[in-house]
Length: 608
Ligand code: F6R
Image (cartoon, rainbow, N blue to C red; front, side, top):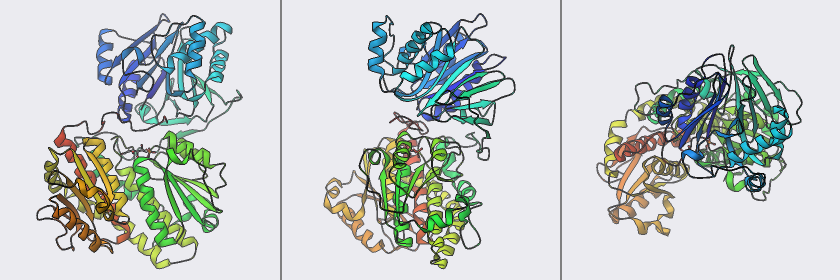
C-alpha cells in the first residue's frame, strides 16, 4: 500500500528518498514520485508509473537535486494508476504526499474548483494540495495554513509537505495512517514505515493520532491535535536481528518460510519458564486480570484471522472459555454483544491494518475487560493503543504473503492458551506439555523444511490447473483455509477451503480429474473421518495431494502423500502450515508470478 519518505539534510536527499522507496516496495504500489527543493528554491517533481526503477530511470533523464524532499509510492484508490495521479501533488509552490483516504474529498474538490483551482488528477490528495495553497493565501504563515487544512480533512491520512517559501522545513501530520519521524545527525526524516529509513537511522519517534510536526536538520518540533507542543519519546528500532536482505534466497517469501525456526525461537525466548509460561510479560496485573477472563473475542483480517480461528480450538478445548473469532471489517460495523469479563484480542502482523485498528478503537467503548494486541511491529498503532501487547519476534516480513508472522502468531496464541490455564491454577501438566511442545517446534519445522524438494515436485501438477480445494478438520480446517489463501494470492489459482465434512454438502460436485484436492491429515482423533472424506474424492477421480503424519497408513493415492513427523496434537496446526506455504511458493514459481509482490495486493492494508 502507499508509502511515504521525507528528508531534510545538508546533502542531496534524492538517493535517501529512492532507497526509502525501494525499501517500501514490498508493500505493493503502482507508481512512484519525488519532489525535491533545488538550491534556487524551486520545486522539482518527477513521477513515473510502475516500479521505483522506472522512477530512477526518469530521474537519470531529469535529475532532481536538493537538500529537502518528499517521496511516495502510490497504490491506487481514487483514480487509476497513471503518472498524473502519482504523488507528489503540487499547488502554488508546495508539494504534498499522502497515505490514507480523504473521505470528504468531493465537497472539497467542488469548493476549490469554484475558487478557481484546476485539478490535473482524480486523486483525493490533489484536493489537499490545493486546499493547503488556498489556506496559505488566507494566512501567510505556513504552519497555521497547514493546521487549517488539517482541520478541514475527514478520513485517514499521513501527510508530508514541503514549500518553496520554507526551504529548511518539512511538515508532516498523522491521523489514522502511520507515520514516524527518524532522527539522524544533522538530518531528519519521516516515513510511513521505519523500514524505509533503516539505512540512515534506527531512532524513531512514533506520532500519535492528530500529531503534526515541523522537521529541520536540527530535529523536530511536535504538536498534538490541540496544537500544544508535545514530546514523543525516541525509540530504537527492534528488528535488527533478522536481516532485510534476501541473502541466498530467490524470494523474500522463501527466505521467510525458512526463517520460521529462528522466528519462533525468538518469539518464545523470554516467555517460557521450564514447565510453565511467564505471564509477567503482559504487565504486573496480568495474572489477576487474566484469571478473571470469562470470554474471549478475537478480531483480525486475512491470515491473522486464520490464526485466531486455530486459537479458538485451543482455548475452548483446553481452557473451556467461549471464544468467538471474527474478521475485523465485519466486527467494526455491527452491534456486538459483549458478555461480562470478555477479553478482546486483535491479531496483526503490521499493527497498522485499518480494519483491525478501527475494530480495536470501536471495542474500547464496548465494555471489554481488557484489550490485547498480538503483533509483529513494536511501534505500531495497534500495539500502542491496546491495553496489553504481546510481540511476536518474526522480524521484518517483506513478502506480501504472510508466513512467519502467521506461525509466530500461533505460537503466541498457544502461549496465551497456556497462560489462561496457568492463572486459573488448573492443569499444570497440560501447561507443561504445551511448553514442551512449543520448545520442540523449531527443530520439527527444520525437519519439515527439508521436504521442500518433494513438495516442489508436487507443485508441477498445478501447472495447468485453475482451481483447487483444500480440506482439513478441527484446528486443521483453518490451516486448510490459510493454505488456500496462500495459493490464491501468489499463484492466482482459485482455491477454496472446506471443513472436510462439508464436502458432500455441495463442493463434491466440483471434483473431477482437473481438481487438485489438498488435504491436511495429521494423526489425530478426526483422522478416520477425514479418510472417509478423501475416499469420496478418490471415487470421483479427484487428484489427492495429502500431507499426513508418518505413522498414518496410506491416506491418499499412491505417490501423492508427503509425510510429516508425528507431533503433539496441540502444535500440529503450526507444523502443517509449513508444507502448504512451500506448496504455494512452488506453484507460484511454476506459474511464473511475482511471488513477493502479487498483483493488486499490498503488504500493509492501511485503508479500509
Ligand atoms: C495474506 C496476508 C493478509 C494479511 C492481512 C492482515 O498472506 O498477508 O491476508 O494477513 O492483510 O494483515 P495484518 O496481519 O498486518 O493485520
